[in-house]
Image (cartoon, rainbow over all chains, first blue to last red; front, side):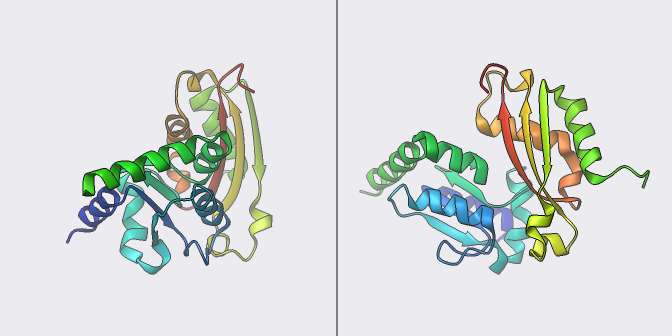
Length: 111
Length: 91
């Protein structure tokens, strides 16, 4: 499968997904760590892709969404931003709201 | 090279594109010495910008304007850019 197609499937099949360096348990970059921590603070499950373990995604994700850096956080298939935006939204209480809504919506669609 | 530092080049691009009312630029590269991106030569910067260009725009639209202004510097010269983008009156 084409890598851009693979990314599209990932972001569409997971209500909340983060592309990060390392994993939420073992982040390999401070920005990825902070973004993953904000997501964890929302109290719902989320998907993650370790871009360091997938060179093809590492190379191509920036052009997928025309966003040059990692991490990248997608909610309902749409890029919401990187570390700064995710943390800022979390501090305002907005991230919790959109993440929970996305997870609820996905559950309803499944049932 | 014209003798212009990476930070000066970054500042010039932001000023040209966004005509900021205020612009603070911090070079955090030293804090990340030994970090993989740094070894490869990419700098870490933090920018705080107040610009009318951000009025009526959400966070992702604002960050995109900044990345557009920075352009191809994101490919090699800059490894990480921390952005605080505010419209006048929000600061």
